[in-house]
Length: 492
Image (cartoon, rainbow, N blue to C red):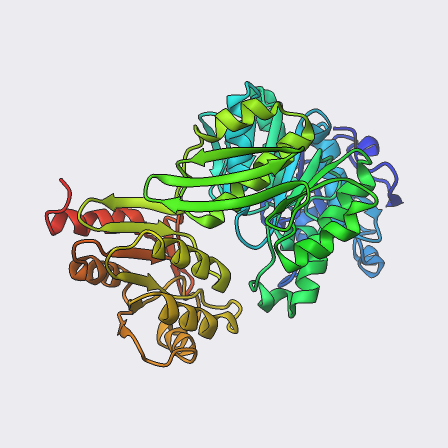
């Protein structure tokens, strides 16, 4: 791409070298001959420290935020451009480099603490059933139809994001449903993209190691809606008003946007009745002056909210209501989200629940199904918000009968210390086991399960790895559970 088109609008401090840019990156290790290197100040590292390395490796242009580094670049045959915010600049440059894919796609963003993955995948399912070619970007994967472009990260950086959108566009995608994390909004990873609208699921405690407090966490989420509303005056929003922060957001968006609410407190898409049964969930809704019943194979009251989020958004967006009602019966469960691993004499469930609210929701839903005991296996991630650990311990003790505390992704922390943090919220009123080795913990939970019990393996869901120290090991909760179900002659 011509560097003048790519860098239009930025201050050119030095114009040297090739006019053609064939690659764009913010990682000096990935620089090629002909790259544009963008110096981003990250959480752990500052890209400005690697400017000379990038130039020596072949970068033909660099984009900087801190002008003091310019003096070190004057001796090199490289174009130097200046921005007052290279995170924003990266979004603009990436959008241009990959041909502005979000302007040719219809992009729908989903944010919230819990439910992002499920809702974004439900949007993809609804639209695909409607006949629209739709991709999905999020925690599990970046996928369009049978093409899986990459394993997931909730929201990739703007370079990778535009690259994936471009690939989906070339494969024939018309819509893309994507998760938008609070980190992504705060770090401007979505800057430069065009959205049709957004969905807010809820806001509960998580990521306070990054955001410090709930108000800052909420403001980071709101940044996404402010950005979309400013960029697209016709944007559609759907907000869960049963959530405290959702109700706040709805009031703020109500006067300026094409917004719909959903939930028991909603006057737009009102949930009247909810029932969770082994075969799925049943609920009644008031919408546009009419009352109707909905059924889905997805289980759990929280999935009623997830379905309502997707349904209400698409209805407000203009998708036929009768189609959405019928399509709801065809929705498929999402991997690692109330995933039934085994359902014969007892039940084994794999779920991503890794926050206090998510753990409480899944356990309350299981309570409505159980006829025996609830055995829960869980831990907490290392190097992450420690304040949620005792809360999760308290919830598990209140709502489960047997608790097996184990390792999640301990990272640099000692798993024993993480378990002690969890136990700080417990009163030892229930049977508690401590088994640090996650595989052994799952084995013992399945071994002790009796007829009509439910074994909940919580925290990792779809993840196929475990992070211990600096190492990443293959680990899949569902596969491990099946291994021991076979060993104990429960499945063939």
